[in-house]
Length: 252
Image 1 (cartoon, rainbow, N blue to C red):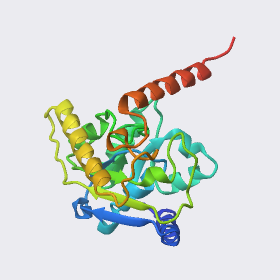
Image 2 (cartoon, one colour):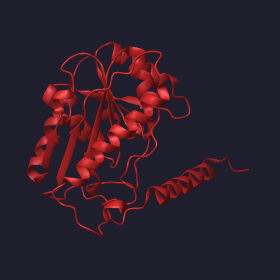
Image 3 (cartoon, one colour):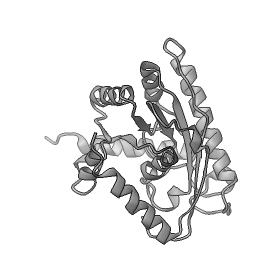
Image 4 (cartoon, helix red, strand yellow):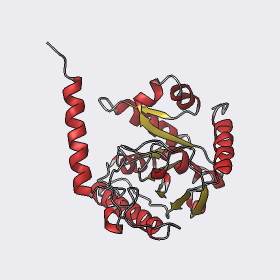
């Protein structure tokens, strides 16, 4: 497929991050295969994670096609960019079409990016994850590449003001060893194992981060930060979902 949009977007992002002196620390990028299909699965702490998870594949000269909610594709600014980069829109009410598109791309040798938590984690720990990434890997014989991100929440995350031009922010990207789920194996067990692998990567990224101050909003509660605990975050998510459902109900 023609790559008219993706390369200049990457170049622009790299230029901006250099100007802002975003201090990248990347490990394990050699685990992203240089050819063939793969499912790249990242934790989700920021609205910018598709950029930074995609950076994990650049040393292998790969472009990642991310599965993202349909709203992003209908936005007047982000929509043309997302479509131009051949990302995959996901209609949460009818996901079969996006799943089929992802399978087709994997079989064609593309890297497909998945945020298996589905939504941003307010606690900055890895939430319960969906099994779609495992099922896609099994169906196509492709590996799962786990990625742990840390630092992106400081730029733009749920419930906090955007600080897109903040300077000198350290940003950690850790890529784990591939996982090879096989057809007929236990999907739930592989999903549990993937959750554990993501959690290990995120925990290592958090504990080795250049800045580990106590009492800041972007630090998880178990490391002394003031982010919601996983239980508090789950309650906030449930309240948000209920409010959205009430808002979407037709009025009489």
